[in-house]
Length: 277
Image 1: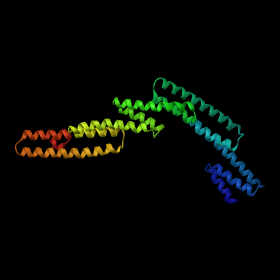
Image 2: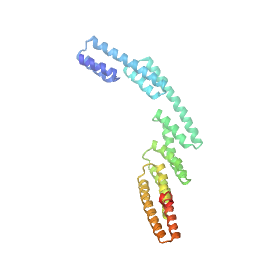
Image 3: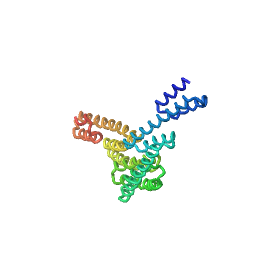
Image 4: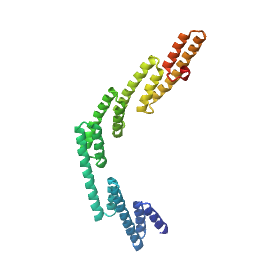
């Protein structure tokens, strides 16, 4: 009995009311006529109700409406006919419905202005409040493909930051959408072509910069990281080779050709201190 009392007290302090009530239930089955056990159960329920109502009030003040509703519903689970909890549940549910209607209206207005990003954000708020909201589900299903098309347009226009932001929005809703990876591959292709052209003209530093710019939009992309390393090594190697030839030509008295080699080294690596010196 003493151990059960200690366990109930501990669970109550920790807020584990269901477990505490289960322990009380075990005691009631062992001692069905024990007034002390019945009284303990009553005190435990009263305490849980008071805590639940207070928690709900605090969450409401913090504008955490869903959390407040959960707290009040836990109270009703313990005492289904608790008028105070019932009234608060009804009040909170009404507030949630008002929020749903407000954000749904904003979503429709944003969509009518072709602001698909804002429309998506508003519909997501609606779904957060009401997971089965059919209009929100339907509209998000229409918006996501349209956003992927818009991101592709932004890539063609060179507005890469805008495209990345759109892909990020879509990813929050549908992380495995194949359109996200396809779009990022398309964007990578643009920077890869830039890098290829620069490298073909021996502008190794500019080629490396193109891949580094892509990494600023898509951090950690493995192929781009590999190209940055490769081009860094290639730039150092070519620059060193041209500078070696320049020194050899200078020693032979061919200053004009030596300067030409230095210029080639600077074309490969404009920041080469040895070439500048």
